[in-house]
Length: 201
Image (cartoon, rainbow, N blue to C red; front, side, top):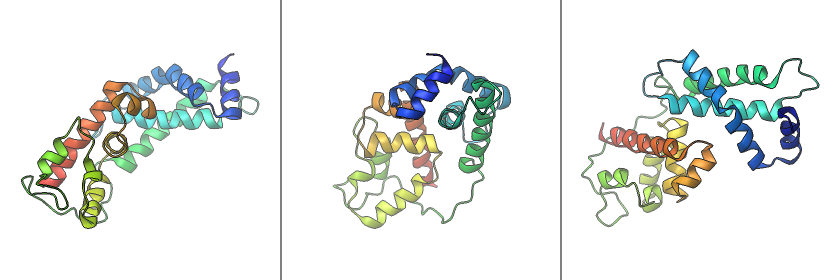
């Protein structure tokens, strides 16, 4: 099947594997747009973040493309969707987004309420033990950590949630996020580092 036929097949059946193949096929277009339009990522972001936003636009393009009603090729149609999705992601998740409530400061040596002598430093440093928010019994502390999580970019937040809350392997996280395993791990690591900074501020 050619690309329009594959897209039509996905729109009929919503086959996740077919969607993944289409995303992989057009991932070079996403990376090309990021490199050309955003050679220097915004403060607090990197190319993995922008790639993720671009993939959101690519998926939206796959879901909405109608070859019979669209005079241009899918690549041309997707270009605009990808570009504007990246811009929207930067506005939505960038360093100047409005913070609704201040995040309280905690010492990294302070014990996390509801745990057996687990410190905040240990909580945010865990890379192979999926504890995270699920390890906390205190409701108010869950809320504070959730507020801190809200300050992460979407890729960071998604990687941290899938790995440490849903307890998925990095391979499964990468598949869910439609990126490489290394990219998913990097997003999670940046998320833990950002949480550490928020709690230490």
